[in-house]
Image (cartoon, rainbow, N blue to C red):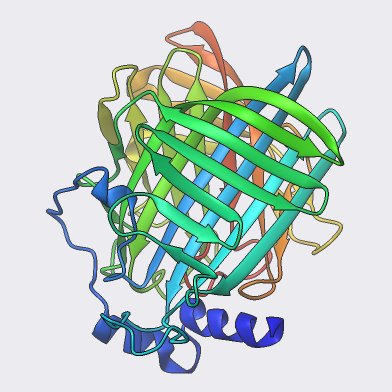
Length: 368
């Protein structure tokens, strides 16, 4: 069953055997000018082939004890759902999820994953508001709060998130270009600062935790441009009340696509688009995985001259490499970082998450 499920999802996401070409003829493509409506747009968009709800955050359980977490739900459609479906067994969509916890004090990185078919109530999503689930794992909006729950061997995450700012629309009012020379794009927004409280269980040890979280929500049809192999993504929460999102799209030679960009969100929630020329990202070191032999950047200097930022990012743990079996065997680095730096020469700090894909092999599609 797992082998068959992984094969189906691989076809859906990575476009093997012509599946992606069929999908592009059936599903809608992102276009500029979309008018976002919330809470509706927190929900699913089955008219697009691929979608994810991507949560990361920083939790504290007491003095000197902190953790990072990632919980991501992916929706990958094989075909547009029938309405109504002819059978409860009809397989239109696959859902899968990644759960990871970084424990810097214990020098541990714990990863779990789950996948199931979008039929028979095993997994699914709501189109009216945020509700996505795979068996007992779920992300659901209740009023103004988002509830997260995931449990697997040796780990449990049970959190309540409350947004402190309105959704930040990336790119051109939520239309995010992913290549300068092709129409690759997505609809993309984030909830960049959410007060967080709840419970984390690690190895049967329950911990009451508080902290800050971030959510990315992205939906699209298609994949990366043919020459692109991966991306570097940064989500930074700063002590001055601002947040920064940046992504760099790379080809096989390491060149950065001109469509790479970012967003600066001020303390009031106003979002400002950053073109590639508006910032610099300089790696400060590297780390070689003992698991995959992939070499990843490790540590960065980020400079945003017009905003006055000069930031240094340091991983809280070197080995935060995700090695997923579903939808296929794919490895990427997804890790918590500490931030030290200055704004207009005034010291500031922060925490963030960084994602590095394509270093252990090209990403043949979009799968964070």
